[in-house]
Length: 369
Image (cartoon, rainbow, N blue to C red; front, side, top):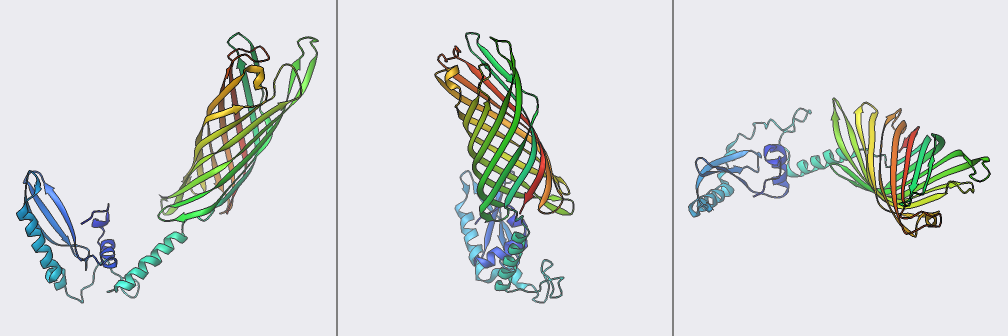
């Protein structure tokens, strides 16, 4: 006896399962609290429909011994030839079966039913999305804000305007598992670079100087993908979710000076991304990520003897596909990192806190195969 969700209400699938696995009888129970009786249903392996039903008594412990004996007797009689559906006219057509001309199957043998089911499954798999290589190349505008303050009142900060750069990402899924949904395991890589300049005034000479700023970010790691079909009117599209875990390295280098430090950060990143179809070839894109642990690199000694970094980020945007393989993507993203320093740094910062905030606007091409 078993009751997988939905199968008892689909007599065609139930009939196929019983035939394929040589199940002679499926018994289902329904308990009525008002009458304290069990209604017992016998499902026919020939039709997949309820072929017999009857009631048996119960007590405080559940099914009574007499009730169990009655079910056993009825089941043995049913299996030994008592299936009422066996009296059905052999020439009568099952409404679920198709004729040879395509309107019904007629009476199919067990082998024919199995072959038909396999063909239908193969057809379903062939209709699933097959694009397991994705790449993007986008123009990017980045804004960076950095504030470091010590408990002793020491402060340094850097605030930029949006500066230009580019963003390149790549994702491939060599390990694929196909089923009712598609799952795949793959790798992702992300490269981002920005170029800025900042004017500072030397506190001693009061002379203004323009410094070059170069921002670099590299990500990489594992990606787990799940595609779930979604019906949209007369068409079917896919909700695409990806879970990622990887490592990120960010470096901001500034021409040598005594005012704004160059910084770097290496962190563990865990996050998720979802593409949700809205209409036609357009889908919303979004996701979140968490940085449970990171290590400050360049200039750490200026602000403390040791440090610990954590943070979070998010992005939202959209993708419009011109063809099956080429589209246009746009997005807005932000990342916030907080670093806690311990001890006293060489720049006279004591027990300092750092807030590192990045914002980005991206637009460019999306490719998938």
